[in-house]
Structure formats: C-alpha cells, structure tokens
Image (tube, rainbow, N blue to C red; front, side, top):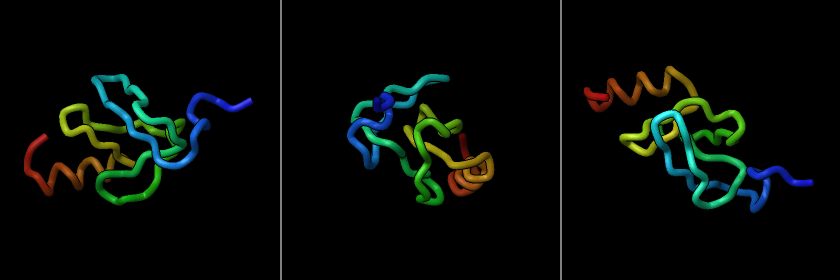
Length: 71
C-alpha cells in the first residue's frame, strides 16, 4: 500500500506554514531552495513559511540568511 507522500512520485508542491506544511501537489520530495538537492518529504524538517522555501539543513538556512541579510 502506498503512503500519502508516495502517490504521484516526482517533485511535490508544498505550502509551508508555521510548524506545519500542506501538500498541494503530491510527490515524494521537494528541492532545497539553497542547494537544489532533493529532500524526501518524510525527511523535511526545515522551511521558511515567510519565504515558502524548503531547506536541506540548518547550514542551508544560515547560508540563505547571509545571502539576503534578513530572516
């Protein structure tokens, strides 16, 4: 039986909220906004609700903050 994130395969579209996320288009992964690497949905831990971006690691978040100079 397929899990809820395994239906559809490919890249998902996600709406990020404060502490929650909603899958808008089913898929198995999203891309890190900084590195471009795929992040499996079940491993996604870091995102910005304000920017609607996913991040692969805390280091990627810090890099984004340094690039933009603001949260």
